[in-house]
Image (cartoon, rainbow, N blue to C red; front, side, top):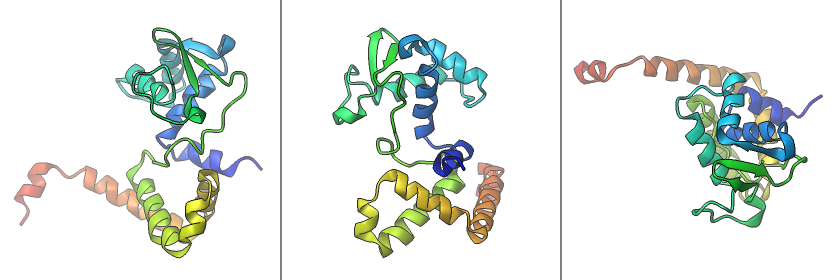
Length: 180
């Protein structure tokens, strides 16, 4: 059996997956170094991301974890990248993959899954197990969440939330303003 958290995050993307995707690309490059445009091309072709501003998003994600960035204000364990030239970065841990679970905030791309996480983390775990939950690592928190989401009741609730979000996305502002 593989890593359940990694498998879950591969299916239910989170903002931290940008970081994982960038690291995965750099691990395939000589010396763990690549220009942002090369990283963008690899991610674009992998179909893992489909946005217009991919290079800007990659640069921002890298700069959040690069002490060479002017606005870097994190602890040393968050310093994952080195700027070797303009828009060219090296993975400091190359050839090893850093464990980023503790560095990134858990935030899912999909609103329905983010809502499930928020409810689980804040309404259940934080209220019932305040000290233990606060002391737990992100990996442990995500592991417990993955198990919780494995329950058919949670899956059914999640599917209902996804459907509701999809239905709300189809509503226009004009529809809302005209309804009384």
